[in-house]
Amino acid sequence: MSATSDLLHSWQRPVDPPIMPMHNMSSTRVIPFAPPAAPRVRDLIEARQLVPHFQPIIDLTDGAVHAHEALVRTPQGCAWPNPDALFAAAREQGETEALEVECIRLALSQWQGLSTPGRLFLNISATTLMKVLAQMDIERILAVASKGRLRGSDIVVELTEHEHVKDFDTLLSSVRRLRRHSIAVALDDFGDGRSSLRLWSELKPEIVKIDKYFTHELPSRPEKVQTLRALMQISQTLGASLVAEGVETAEELRLLRDLGIPFGQGWLLGRPAAQPVPSTLPQAQEVIRSKELAVIPERRRSTQQRATPWTMLEEVPALPPATTNEQLFARFSADESLFALAIVDPEQRPLGLVSRQAFIARYAKPYFPELFGRKSCLLFANQIPRTVDLHADIDALTEVLTSEDQRYLTEGFVITELGRYRGLGSGEKLVRRVTEARIEAARHANPLTLLPGNIPLTQHIERLLASGREFVACYGDLNQFKPFNDIYGYWRGDEMILLAARCFTAHAEPTRDFLGHVGGDDFVVLFQSHDWEARCEAVVREFNEQARALYDDPAREAGGVMAEDRHGTLRFHALVTLSIGACRVNANTRATAEQVASCAAGAKHKAKQAQVALYPSQLLMD
Image (cartoon, rainbow, N blue to C red; front, side, top):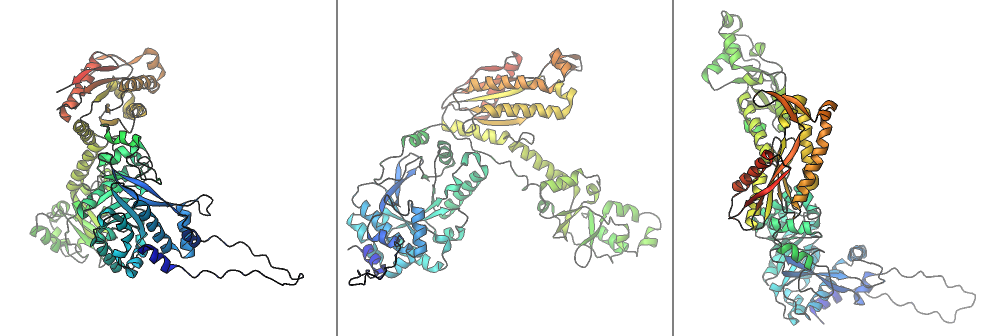
């Protein structure tokens, strides 16, 4: 009998005594009805009715099978139709450890008769692992594996239910014992809301499996992309390989591949089966080997790092209200860098703010020192100063800029934390930081359409060029937009730009074609779709039809408006239309992102000059 069978046998409970038949009973005695016994997980284990299955774990760089995870299936007609129900019943009946050990025994027994390359992942809860190793040496546990010439390096112990561990030191000791026999450790379902970064840091597993939540709908969830990028950085720091679980669509797989996640697992790659599969499924192979790139969804870039009260905080000591004007003048005279001073009560709550410029001008007036020199400095202070919380966001700072009270430009503003004084901020820094933040944000995402701006666009061109695939860069621009904007105003001008954004968005394939708004009425689409010409024609057709609705009736009937041109001459301008210039970029070109952008802009210029909807003749080659 194998070591794991020995251990399983040692955990078995005594069998209930059989019910003896009743003989020689009086015919008048009624035998009570005995309901059938509820199904027991223990009976299923002892009957050896569980069936092992194996699901492949795929290398996303080349599509090769890297390993298989051992799973379990119940027989037909079982009271528990799936593993989740089976393990839930085992927990209720106190048979979790016995069930886990039986699953490992089955997996090893089946695996030893196969010649499948790659490693075998074995699921076991952290609690069961500690109990098993407390009762038995690893050498005995590996006895079953050794019959199939499995080495410790061929096995990965995948820890489940690890978030409930309280005896962390014992778990760490158990992991060390595994590693002494070259057995690798993996953390399962990391990121499901319960897993611990501390556990990852302390155990330093060779492999971390990312919960399928982060894979599901990944191409449309930029926050999940950011989370995966963060996990990749942690994995590089701690020396672990990542496995993305739950890969079910081609778009998810392509994006995981392009992000650099090394391994994947899911139904698109290979389903659980009684016999391990030698290769990944054809559909997944096609995606992995394709040169087509995923469009990485981008979140609107936060401006918080550039514009926060933290970045403007000047820790200037405040004054008590008993400070006299003479003492205040001495403070300003001693330090010419002070633009203002705050006055606070004993609990550090702001009472007022004194501007250097205003105070010095008042102090220089005749008789002011004699009349007010020994009075409280609060007398001429701004007793309702502008205050900003230390943790305020960019919107709160923008409110300061747009407020009717513009005294902050000279006297600054008070920065508080939980209502208590922390320091001062200057109006000059506020204006500069908020402006810089807005400009930087616009380079990443256009504030009107929220479409990606210049920086993400350039980054995607560079990715396409590095991939060596052919693509088409299309530059869209509105004709006669300035006269329309001059006559109808910026509000309706914004509506016209938003209409263009909607038309482009409707006809660009979001997982293949990258749409950017580079400013004003200029849009760029990087097409990987083969039918890009038909898509562009549909964009132009729909925009030109819908743009008419933004004019008033007389303009629509006339086919345009009378307005001044760029030289100030009044003339007739036709209705706004859309022109697109296309630059076809040859595969494996050595062009730069700047050259691609210039080529597309040149094609757009020719489209506008020729007054055509689409000018596709530009070709960028080596």
